[in-house]
Image (cartoon, rainbow, N blue to C red; front, side, top):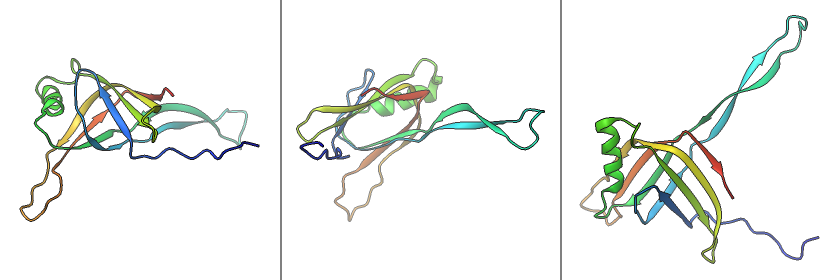
Length: 146
């Protein structure tokens, strides 16, 4: 029996690494789900049962939100894809979960990402909320590296 209780990590401490883009202060990161489609297969000699095989793996989009600053790097990435397509503008992204002491604990590597949606902030004269930008990008696949 363990001498201590393992507490789960909190979701509020994380950092994001994007090839060639320096951006700080992400307030939210939402992963799309990953799923493997089942493929049904039935042999002609078995009239009652259908076997299920693994099919195509799909990865949902990932969304990042951050308080707007002077940096235009992420919008620039979106604009590059808008102007000339994703082929020459794919980037690898890593999302790293950090524990309460500031140590990297879990890492997800997202491969061949490109932005598909950019949302500028909303403005309201009677609000004191932080203006939030949002970018959504597709990923070829992702893996949990640690």
